Amino acid sequence: FFEAQVFIGVLGFSQKIYAEAAEDQKSQNFIMSHTRMYGAFGGVSKLTVPDCLKQGVSRTHLYDPNINRSYQAMAVDFKTAIVPARPAKPKDKSLAELSVKLTMRAYRWKYRHQVATSLAEVNQRLLVIAEMINNKVHSRFKISRNESWLKQEKAALGPLPGGNYEYSTFKMATVHDDCYINVDENYYSAPKQFRRERVSVKITATKVEIFVDLNRVALHPRHKGHHGAR
Image (cartoon, rainbow, N blue to C red; front, side, top):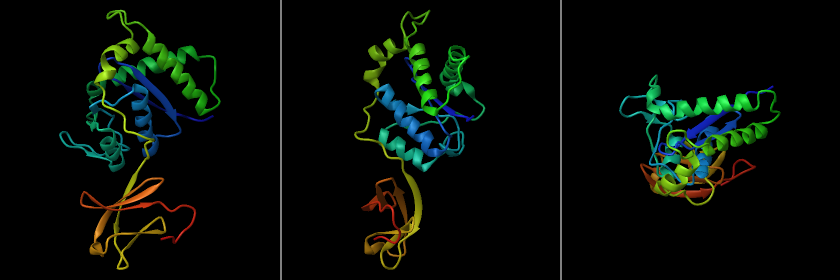
């Protein structure tokens, strides 16, 4: 048996639900679930209100919480503002709380006599459940979540960034006297005027970027499969 972690997002106006499962709640899965959610919604909301998880929020604060750098980088690329829900304040994310309840209740009912054998199967089932909820006509408003999203909300969402999103991590490094920095035992050059200075390094699967303050001073393709490369 294995345990899957379920990520659920919901739009604020139409209440359209997105759900997927992952092996864990580590930063990369947490952030990439956001990118797939925005893709499923066909756009990006101006505000993103996550739970106060350490994968997204490194330090909680009532007015100015510290956002994890990888999470903040995703928010910048997707042009959304991260406004975490306050700890122990479920009303800050009441729609998400309701969506979790609806999704998991429907999942347990529909698949009560079946056991999933893979993560892909769990995700396929969650897709069915989300569509079932999103297509159901609201008893009060006489319109489904999908109809409300398509007719009224989708056009108000921000555009998706082009290309496939790459998860990024960050580290601080010191530029050596030979004008190189060390990233995973490979070496990348920085301009000579920054020798012996501390710089910020952004690392993705395909590239390494070096920043001084907020200014990018170097960009390199990332070396793979060997050590000591320059």
